[in-house]
Structure formats: structure tokens, C-alpha cells
Image (tube, rainbow, N blue to C red; front, side):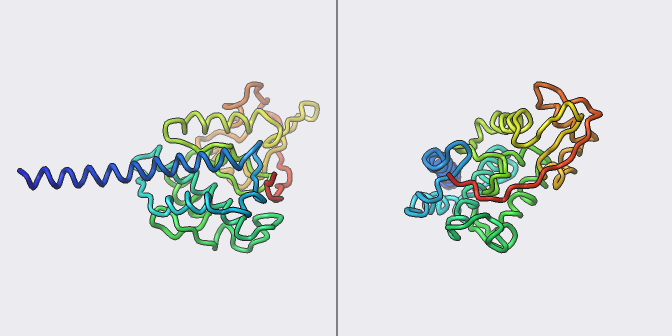
Length: 238
């Protein structure tokens, strides 16, 4: 009986430590983003002068354990880990004009996260998109460029993730940075993200415009023609 109790206490202690580490990660990520992000732009100059806070939160991320069966914790962790790693990658090459100035930024540079050595593309495509089939990831994974949806000045948290995903999708489709509607010409211009990941936005048999309308206050007529404007890869710096 005593052995059973001891084993149970050890297991509970392990679960508690993991939960505390994850909670610490979210708190520190939130504090870092609040201090360094404003109106979607990042204070790269200030971060470059003192990288200790960023290094500390990424060090915590390195030892985190998350499982996709715990979907909200898993998704929130990897979204924040992606965004922070983008900032880290840009800082490592700073000053720079674009993430594309560093060859292999998305598909070659490895990041130590949750016990993995992983590239940014694998976080996005293998750990998130492939596992959950949610197009809204495209509005919260921020590639460090002006053409991306804006980085928010707070962490994505498991308790608020659904509301945050929904909010960022609504902002994208009701503003003018992700789509531009021309009623006179009956046309919609959209971000290249809509073209690059068309399969995500049409996976349920809808057209891109039908998907857009699920978030739009003012619906777009479905006979409007959709085209795509050039992607702005300039760094999203303050």
C-alpha cells in the first residue's frame, strides 16, 4: 500500500512540475510580448540590446512537455513557441530587412523546443496544421514580416485560445490588410496566404469567399472574383 502511495505521489509530482513549467512559459511569454510588441510591430532594436528575457523564455520552452491529446495547451504552446522562435531567428541575424534574407530561415534553422530540434515549417505544417485542420492558425502564426497577420502583444493562452483564434480571423477578414473588397469591380484581392493554403480554406467544400464570409460582418457576394496581392516580406519592426 505504501509503495502504491509513493508511486502515486511521484506521478502527481511529475504532472505538477510539467503544469508549473507550462504555466511559467505562458506567463513569461505574455510578459515578453507585452513589453516588446505594439500594433503588430516588434521592438527588435531593444531586444537585440538585451536578449536575456527572450533567451530565458525559450530556455523554458526547451524543457516543456506537451501532448496533442491536451489540445488547448498543445496548440497554445506551439503557437507561442513559433512566434517567439521567429523573433529569435530575426534577432540572431539582426539587423536584417526580411526573414527571407536568412537562407533556410523557415526550413533549415533548428530551434530547441519541447525536447525537439525542429524547424519553423515543421511546427506550422506537421505539429499544427496537419493535426488539427484549423485554417485560423494562419492568423496567429506570425512569420516576422509585414505581410503576415499582426503579432498580438500578449501570449495565446489555453483558456482564451478559441476566442483569440476567432478574433484574429475576424480582424483579418473585416479589415483591409488581409483582403481588399472592390464593390465597383466586383473583385476581392486577398493575401497570398489564401492562395498558398487554398486547401485549408476550402477543405469543407466551400470556396474561399464563402469561408471569408463566415467571419465577415458585411458579406461578400459569392460571384465576386478573387485575386491575390503581392506579399510584403519586409520585417515587422517598430
